[in-house]
Image (cartoon, rainbow, N blue to C red; front, side, top):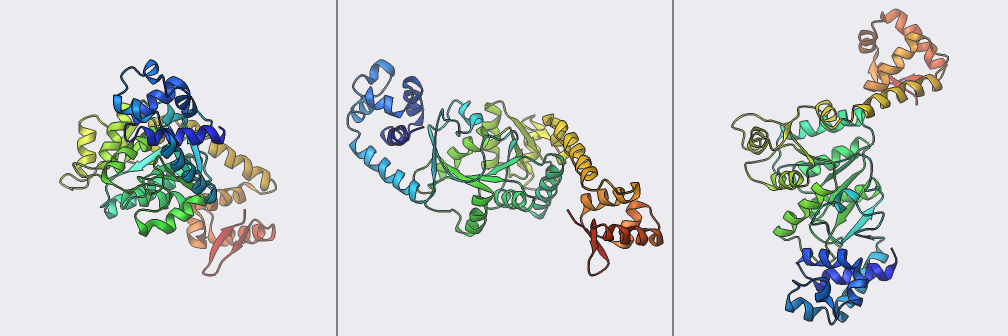
Length: 375
């Protein structure tokens, strides 16, 4: 999409103020921001219900265009891209929703239209239980489905845990913000946000100089829900932003899942209620989620590819040596005694096998008696 179209589309969001439904209607009916400008004198033919105030406002675009030019200068300086509704880079799942933003601002490296995209949301006051759930879920999902984009909102609690676990497990992760890209809120998450620019990205519908007001957080939840295949609620009180995201996802006919919690726990009440009322499917593991989404083929293919790679890299290994490679590949570094138990090979024989594998350059011993697979 050319710069002129982007300029007029940004300006259109200024002309219509907070009424993005009107902006969306005009944009879709006429095919772009520039087209709306060109039809500014006969806008009622396109939108008969357009208010007198908006009809009058659309006559003079000078201030809106000046502000749009200012925004585009900031974007160019800070390597920000604008994705207008209808362009190839715009999140296609979000484009299918009835209230999609007509323009999104994006910093980052992740492709937003990946085959698998999920969001993980929940309370800002997550407990150790919630953190442990996310840690185990993301690590297991990475094993089952190595190519999934993780989306959340960079907020305290569940959001930031989801982003950080995604990063540590090698997933790309995108945060949907409730303000412009000239700031990071909360400030405490700035370093994580910087890391996400290299392994994910930051996305918003808001121009710079937009404050992180309460209603902006509510509105951004529709982007979180709309750009993903599924919403996963980890912990939530009886009321909260995570439940709003789940409700929006339901309205979009997207899959919604929730982890159950202890009865009486205030930060599991929202999840338990949602499951009880059939607002979310109950999951207790990544395997549950993969099965429910029908992504089992990903997991099967991942294992087959891993086995194939193993045979290609180490074709000369014996069956016992390939077994050791599989164990170390799945678990990471292991001490000799633990490796003996897992492989069911006596320590005396295992020591000889490991020495032979070391000579072949397959693994190496570490301080403390552990062995590390060389890949």
